[in-house]
Length: 381
Image (cartoon, rainbow, N blue to C red):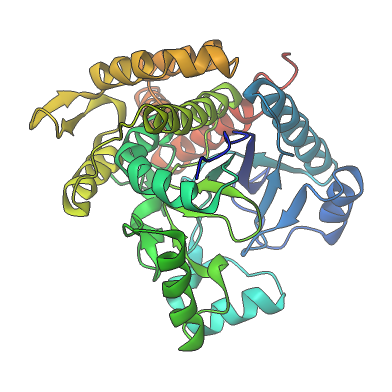
């Protein structure tokens, strides 16, 4: 039976950390009024996250990334304006440069109470934020087929997003330390390969029947079929500090799904490689970011990431034109050339130290950089 062409709608979810503008540390217990202000202005598009120092926003679904970017700009601007009234600011970074997870408090909500009870210190360490991109894939079987193939490209997306080089005041040497924290949870990492949607449902059903999970929302894979929407949800990426970087990654995600569907229509498909191989690329993306190399498994050699990105852009050119996101896709080249948020954070720290700042002051300089960059470009069309 022929499968109807997917809608390929796109929606973006982002998580932010709330910092005290005076101390630059996290606000472990923000005033309730701030969340109420956000909720009154962003009805249905903002919610608390696990820790009180976090806040999550989500765009509505759109046909184009350009529309999603405009909505995301509005969400960032509103959270920033509301926070300013209470002496706080959001930062779009996947870790805070120096905050301690031991000093944070989680939101009092049944779902989070269960999470804290079941996962204990593993949950308490979740002082991390991410970005999720939903792409509309309406057919159940197609969602599974494209998920299997898309896994190959997840490290390439992570590489462009890295924004978590610091943890607890230490420069970790990784561009995405966030994933080392998140991977301590169960049911994370790359998804397994499934032969059909019914096989996926059977696995979820077995886990629910055994009392391991309540529902499929507790599958925290890097890529998963959404349990709430007819979408595939890309979850591997750090949250991007710059708005335009987030739009570029959303566009790449949307176009890669479109490309894989286009191949299917021509009786072709992307080769599915063993997870152990893709996992090594995942690690290299975490460790080195855009300065590093990933394995081209077709050639069996390490290739500079920037070269691989050029190959991907060429591969999806037709899809970018059809989905009206050529400019957003092209912006990925700028990220690769200038570096990600992680690269700029490390540079801001090194510059502050070179100018005579001690380590604590240099870390505060990184926070100042993140505050400014989070709202950069929110007024642009």
